[in-house]
Length: 166
Image 1 (cartoon, rainbow, N blue to C red):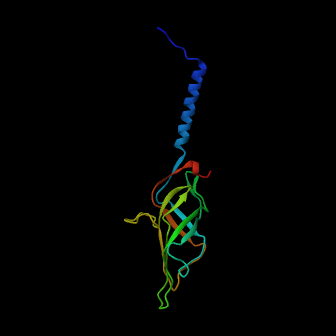
Image 2: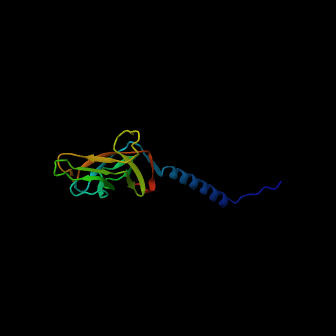
Image 3: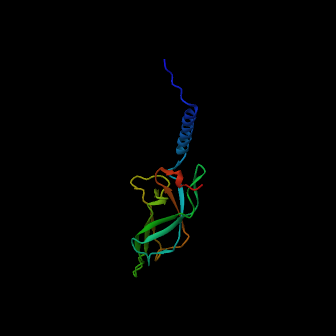
């Protein structure tokens, strides 16, 4: 019977490779976090909106109001930009009809990964994930810079850790 002896350096290299592979797999398992459905996100309006000057299709600039943490990792950082779109813009009429201003923020982007948003804490049938802010009062609708809006993550979203802030 012939037995083959593998040199020790080769065995050591194989063992080292195995250990490194195990650590890599462990690290890979920890490189993602799940941003749970229903997570509350506060958005802050970065500019004043007015039904007299807004037009359908105009961008609406907002920022995340505070850090969103999952398992100690900042998944969404305060100040991250969010862009919505005006969907209805009607100035008050001379006949006394009030103005109307609506805008939609369907998602926010976390380093290229879109996170769908909704306006209600619990999912509603047929909502479709888009976020719509209807405003109607008095004469013209005016929303001041700095106004805060509470929105919610529409579905569980896996976020890659390599794009998270530490």
